[in-house]
Length: 144
View 1 (cartoon, rainbow, N blue to C red):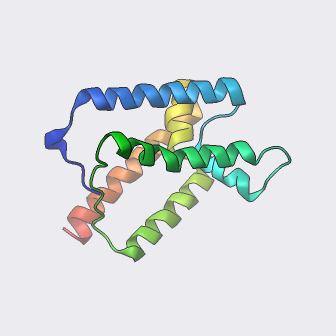
View 2: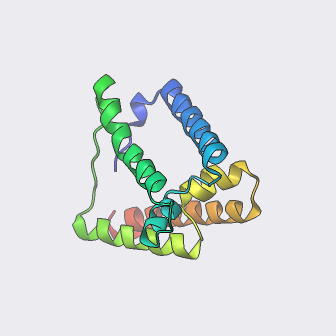
């Protein structure tokens, strides 16, 4: 994936952060749940009665948001610098990591840190360190 840092503007980034924070607070207030995407999707794999519709609505919102956004502005270009096998491996490793970490970056990094959870702080530090190490290995040791 490529991020065009030369055209970065702070206002849209700040607005996005505020909207994510507001959505997480409203989700917790009205649903009593942490907005961790892996937990929400994982709950569909082991559905409980009365627990499916809000999970499907959440996922539909994740899909609908960029579709709605493109009505008002062009979506940024998404470019992956790896093949299908690399993406599949990355997805598998993220899935394994969310199992070991008892949550994903949205659950720990956004929701857990805002609640001052020590477990989420450790998990987020591990996510970040693993990401830094992966980029270093892929760019400097393996692929260049």
